[in-house]
Image (cartoon, rainbow, N blue to C red; front, side, top):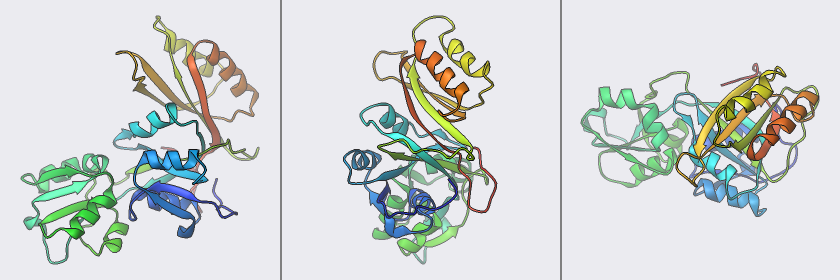
Length: 292
């Protein structure tokens, strides 16, 4: 999916304004911020799509340095019967923001989302070793909190948040890895068809039985058919200790015979397999296809 959306649809993202999720939603909506609306939580994004208040939601699923966003995987596997309709890759640059007139040595506390704090762990330890760290629901919420306070606080947030909340950028790039990228999923109520000329990706979730070689038997079905797995992730099944759900992404769509055959065989040896969706591999506008 490299083109824009051609009809006016309502897209939800984790707010408030100024988050990377907002940037990803604008990118997906081909630059039209009028089509997007912010939600107070990931659960609200999913609920809004499920009950029809939103047509689609843009949610972060993994980061190149900090891994999977477990809450999103849990919501897809659990209470909401939604599908993945697309993906967006967004380069992530965390900036350190303060109220105007404050400098780095005055900062006493840094607020941000837990993933942003983790992405800047080495920088914070090196440059602000005495500063306390505090988690917020989003990077933009951290910026909003700093802007409303008279305390010497800072926020790790996108450059967009500095403009949104009239903050000063004192460190333009604070993340430890310059090539930091977050992958977002587009979730909806119905599967989106892929055109034959587009490179596709499929995502699924399943449980496995407690027996030797259970996971190997599943992975083998893809290997023998030459299907390339691009991600495998495990999450607690939230039932018994030691029970896990596995999330797998692979190159190929359900319209391909080898993929249909693999999924048919995998369904026989898994517990509660759910195909989350087949969708076009993300292509940044004017750039080559991106794969995390």
